[in-house]
Image 1 (tube, rainbow over the protein chains, first blue to last red):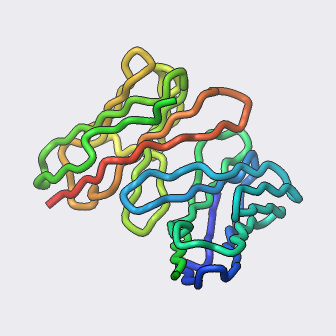
Image 2 (cartoon, helix red, strand yellow):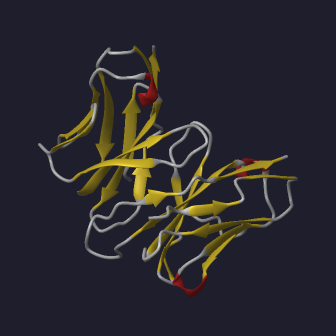
Length: 110
Length: 116
């Protein structure tokens, strides 16, 4: 059974204080690993897809990396508008289903 | 490009009542998904459609939940009768391609259901 574990559950940062969110996964052959951002009362918003170990993708202050067992979402010099819940999901080979973690709730304090 | 549309945004019902949710996917997207997101959890797939057909409904509680996708576009998800544990946000997502390629799923705003 595919499993995704995200840590920490919640993270509180001062504005400008860089940090990383972790996503550990167990899947029988990885087709893709996805990062989404979810604001309160809204649906998840797509950020990145990573396909193979060693791959990295960047968007503004966010950088996602992937190893064979985990993915990291690095946030550099965060701003209050980066406050949201960040969800990680995996898609197994031969499947279109996304298995999500519970998310990390990020709060960036001015 | 318009995003995934869902309605209603909020619904409050009594247990044992029925409820229906509507979803209009992004134009041209062949695949449509319904997810259930309980507070504090990640979304869980209920059912996946490819055009008109069901691809995966293994996690759909078929004794009370049903879904259809008419003409390969809009979809409705129905719960009858509702239970207290059905209180959740119901998310609809769509993706462009339907086979062989990892495909990004784009989500709607969701419908928040409260069962009293």
